Length: 396
Length: 145
Image (cartoon, rainbow over all chains, first blue to last red; front, side, top):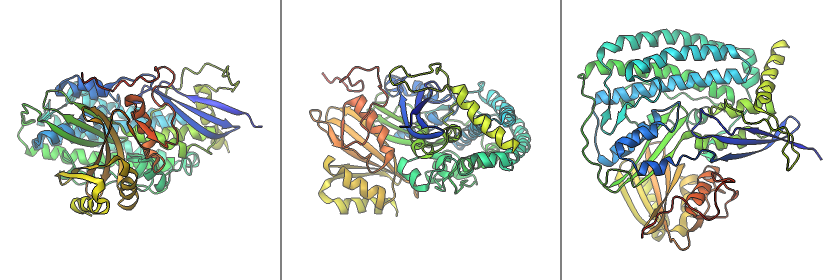
């Protein structure tokens, strides 16, 4: 009988909504089964939100995800504004979209960097994270924070982007575009990256539909779903842009979608900045005095896919029920399809491909499971396996 | 298909299983259905009308356990919410996870938080309360006394 090796991945992933543990059951090099555990740090945010006022809940939902911190307030605002039936000023719409797209750029860069790191390509990692810095500086200039910007509120945004700041944002984006050309070229034209990512972790269209996967994960398999196009909100119907898709469904396709999406984001921001110039400074919100009884379903396209919020209001100043679904909740489950049958070194990048930000594979010092006697590999060994495969390919 | 056609299709096909249809706007609608008809209606929505499963929301109200199954028709941005009410004494409903894997986790989560039983679930293991929660304690249940 072949002895299965258990490889735990987790349980702590600070870049994800929640810590979680993947158990990869392997026979030799091949992943045969995956089990998933979570709940290590159940924060009870849905219930917490029911005990806070709508204004306070914005700060709460902003802290669900540390990377795409605006996507949850975006969806929450859409849901609550649907209950109120309020139309926000165009200036606020443009500002919301600018924040959303800047966030998409920095989140995608973070992923590209991490993907490079997992493949043993630390040059890509260094480049991507270096180019991400000026984007975070823009956030600091606009909101005072590099992350968790606290820009959203019911009826508009908390802070204006003054017209005087527009040239700085434009200049930073122009500089970034050139750097992104370099980065995109480095990733798309590299034969070793092709060898490591093409045909790896493939998700078919049917897998995507079955698992209800969203965002770049779905678009890389040829399913052109994007909330910004399908159910337009904020300033997205006011600007021209296209949904990026790829057909192959492998890790390379997911990288391709994300890299090309950044160009669309730059274009959206530039158009929004032009739009801002036409609107009067300071008109960034309509006053909402009370939230009537009713329900609202708001969704927004986060960097990882659709964020969905359902809010039930009983007419009081806090939600009676608040359901939140982050995109990773459906995307992570696709691991069952993308990883089983892969080698362990490819499983690393397949797990990372849906952008669950799986950088922290620590707390795995145990060598053997005392009950079953199964050998347990630690996180560093796992990353080293993946890096070694790249080195071998390079040296061929 | 536009919103009216989708709602009309479901209403005509399932007749008395559909208790109420409320169109809130061109892109939002809620359909109340009998719990027993869930599998048939979802099968039609998911396979024949290509609605995408988003997620399900459970809620404990005075009427019982309410579940909203959120579906999206991405061609026109419509979100259809299928609404069922289950009695508190016997909160049981068929699992959708055999039809679509996307429902697997959320049903397990609703079971752990509310104690709703999903019949014929293919993987009825614990999802978020593995190892450290007491049996039979459902933290999201409310106290209406």
